[in-house]
Image: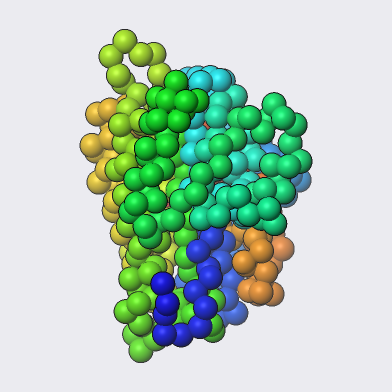
Length: 350
């Protein structure tokens, strides 16, 4: 796909806010900026990660969520315990080439016993961080990871992934999907790309369509293609609740949008939140929980050019971010499905 301005090479494991570090971010969304000109509690958050990073309490939303918070001090649910300990469980990470997606693969290898399907556009690129990680593993651990090409803008690619999971010998013997992590996303850098747009005048149709294709349409169509495999309440099968995790962003909250800007990105994430809420009603009947998660501002390769205005305690190490997300996922139940949550388990209003 060609565009009218710059190079659009920002399809990556952004997870919603990994790239929210443009120098002018203070003018875009106060709740994402370090300190936000307000005092925060001295409370800190520690994940199950080995990271020593301590994050300050997340900002308070401008409205009230209809969902309860996820209590990270509680024990993990029985469904999570079963998913994580089952060697026949299958977890899929969409956007696994680097950043949050790659770390999600690493953390799932450590925290679960099942198979991990790592998807991105070119998973077999020998120079990619994903392949470098795979080469560092023992043969036993390598056998647990299946790499599969996936282009979210190509329906044939999405359908092929569904067919792979249903027909590949190892996958077919499991005939299931226990966790789907939609991590891939696009934001832009504001210089070589139109997005994130600070004004209506900056909007370009091709970039807007591109953002929606990657951040919304591709994820929803992938969920559709994998819905049957996610069904956990199949008669005569004893499977725990399956989970869908859509990485969103706080700037996708309409209630928290006080300054505008970031048109295409905000719209794509707001729509993803609505899709998550809508599908949760339907998927609940088949034993699947679906949530959207704001990961916080995370230190990834794509964010490095924009980190100078982010205070150290506000820039999350990628292992901290991912383990926080997984800590949230391991504690959700039917009362949380359809909700939007931050990395600390706090419900964010739509």
